[in-house]
Amino acid sequence: MAPITTPAVLLRSHEYGDSSRILRFYTRAHGLVSVVARGVRGKSGKGAATLATFASGDLMFYMKKNRELHNMKEFVCSRMRSELASKMLVFSAASAAAELVLSHAEADAQPRVFDTLEAGLDALCDTESPSLLPGTALSVLWTITHSFGFAPQLDSCVRCGESVLEDELGRFDFEAGGMRCMQCSEDSAGPRVGPIARSQLEDMISGQVPVGLSHTRRHLGLVSDFIAYHVLNKPLKSLRFLGSALPPDDEVGPEVG
Image 1 (cartoon, rainbow, N blue to C red):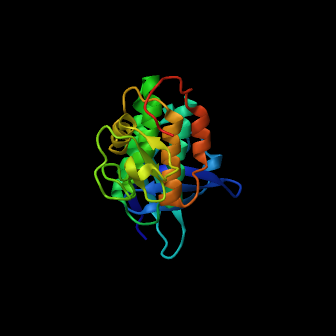
Image 2 (cartoon, rainbow, N blue to C red; image 1 turned 90 degrees about the horizontal axis):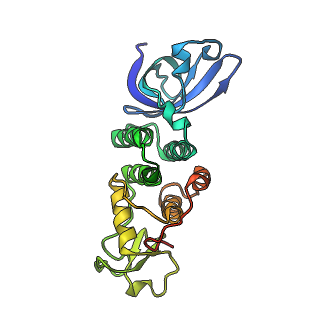
Image 3 (cartoon, one colour; image 1 turned 90 degrees about the vertical axis):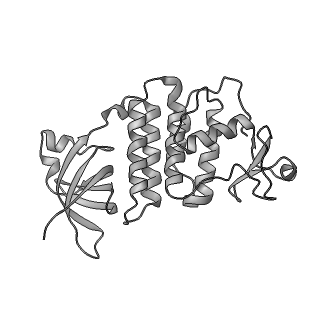
């Protein structure tokens, strides 16, 4: 049997037996793949060290039909992303991204999801400005959610269908998946979202990081509740950790909540 080779990101690992590990990769060609890496816990050197969470590279494994666990031959690492361990905020954001993919993805190829995940992890590694890290973390979550095919409706009211005006203060309807205009917001209990916050949401969904983002915990609440309503049907546990890592919301900014 010839091994399969595919680009992959290591998202989770745990011990198996006395010397092996079970590794869960998200791959570009086969979606979620679980492999057993035999004997790696007894090894030292570069090969063992590169089997670190969030590392990217080429995974070679023997696929067994109708089986959930396959045998790994080799993992050739191209980027370790050790920078993610240096700051709690970026590590918690990467952990939330990994949990989102592990909870929703399947064993089917979704190249867009794979590319978005890699780009998001790279952005968390490469963002040097502390002021941009919260927006980067939130953008990673929104872009992965969008790559799965889920995005909030922001330009038109989810109730009446009329355009939401550029300067309009409306409310977010989580069940309907988007904005209500000012008139339709009168009987809604959803969080208020003003024009600046709506523009910032649009930026983050498209992969841009808003400059001067404020009320980051309220923005986190938006993406958290949206994921719970429309992607997983349950809360993403890692987001509590991410919330504790966000800086205080001291600035005066757009209304979200």
